[in-house]
Image (cartoon, rainbow over all chains, first blue to last red; front, side, top):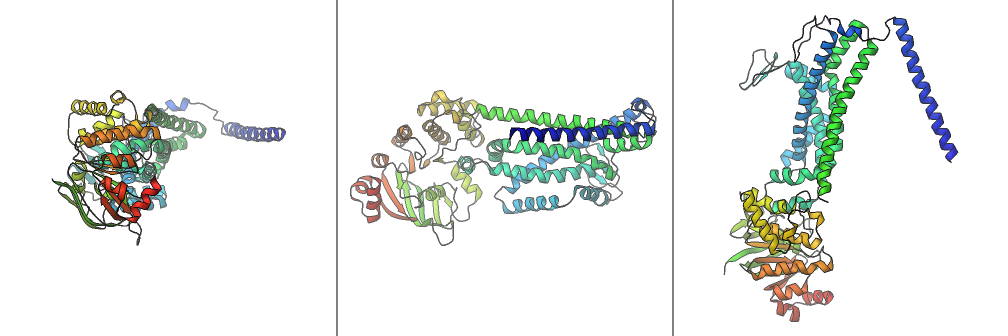
Length: 296
Length: 246
């Protein structure tokens, strides 16, 4: 038995090494054929392309490195805003689904069912071409000015592309978060609801102070993976022409032919971003569990 | 003598054709202790849970402290009742993530808008009354069942209720923990609290109850003073139940 296990492990190791060798060989062959070699000197050269939107000043004469940084910031902007909004939407929809109010719970149920059946890419294209580009050319609205040129919100100028990606990611991820929140809420014993009700506490207050804190341990692990999904799904921004990290990398690779270095940078950036997200959530998780353990 | 609870012809069914409450009428006067007894499934828990709107009614009329509760189950009216009626559950239902003190002060702060120090001082006084003043900063799971149930009583009392409902308060306790909870309830009765108590504790019923109500299959079989009920119950069903209990 032990012997057989050893053989299986040995076999898997050899197969993995062979695969790795094959990949490295391919890489070397390609590097020789293109005659480029592996290097990052090109990052300092001027990019030569313009970016539709940038959080910091950017002109085509700035370097590739700066262009990629701007792309990374654009990604970060849409991801952070998406995380916050998707959480708010998801918690609201999840709470609505487990509420006693039949209208609210069926509305939330319809939202979840519809959004989960349609591919994200289609939804992004819908928000971009139908919802936002379908707006009239002349701004309408007061506090929020809407037009097909962009959205003006309290002095904040948001491009149509940014809005389409943000709304698409928020609505899509919000539906999954809603299901996770609903599951967590349902895991809290009925007696807890009865106890806060019998004390005359309002439903919303009881949900916030009594039910949700107890649902958190069940919610957090699944929520983390939704957050990571949102970050990774943000690369679909290229479909609507939002200048996120992936879109800028794509242009850079096309212009310089530095596919290997480009993808390495891209992989590292997302690794860093997702490590930040999962690290933050892990810290939050252990803080929540710590408080719960203290109460045991 | 003012009427605290007046119910007439209450009907409630969870599954069609099976009535958990089958035309229950009763009256509880202020300052009275009414003990409700009966076999499991007789509808006694359902009955007292209608008194603070945790269960809705299919039909019938219910008047609690002058507020009408009926099949319409108006949210504002239900909330108004709950602020004046305290409830203690079989499973304690303390909030596990809040300290004992926070368990007790949450409702006074949020519902009655008391200041934090004021609510805390009152909570400590109530815990002292229950003989567990030193537990204020622990969490529920660090306490024994009997202590938890006394916290639950203090939590309900913190809103100065005019009526207290007890739904089998000692059924989930270890036998050696039952007395401390019953003692706390006895004290409460002595101070003139209006109480409706669902329990299987015959000793408590005999000693503390002003009246004993016996239920079976969603109906009130008989309501008697404890002396009569325990020595010469009027109904055959009551006598059979008592003979099984003793």
